[in-house]
Image (cartoon, rainbow, N blue to C red; front, side, top):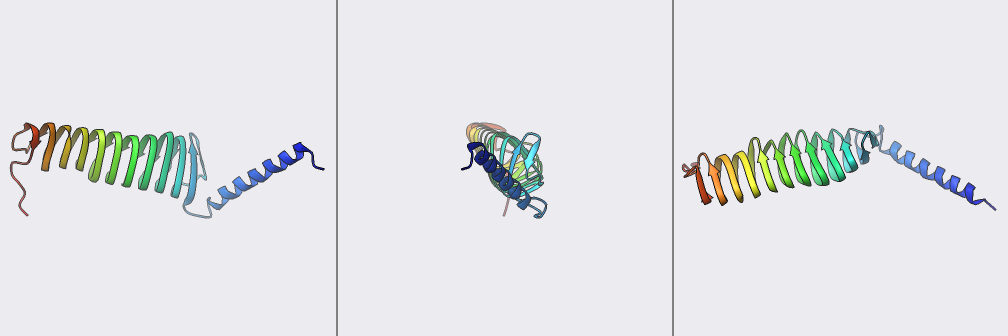
Length: 199
């Protein structure tokens, strides 16, 4: 009859062997990992590219993320993102972002398309994105901004409490609207470009 300690040791060795086997299966033999687990200072498997799911606690970083990105109290960082992200923390994308990203803070410094949903969106070029947030600030263009405070260089449409842009293409709707090319530079309730583009 096996002793309880021997049975626990055997179970521990089996669990470790299974974990190492999974890491090996998703490791160097494949260019992309199907699953990645990330914490500060470590990611398993240690692959720069994920095509599947990444689960991060506190911090996760890679070069390319396709699929589902789930972060818990995390700074979830990648250069290229495509898919669906749900981050209880900060979504940091330094290059291309496509799909839907929901987090407390979206900090994206490349080109965004799809949807950004966050309490605070700090974006660069979101000319192809629908942005939903309490605060959305874009250094360049946005497609549609919906939230409390929206500010961009150029926007197709802005709907919020306060809307600010240099160039609005269609309309602004909110308590206070500011557009350099608006029919008035500052106007309550609505604003639209004084010279509409011809088709």
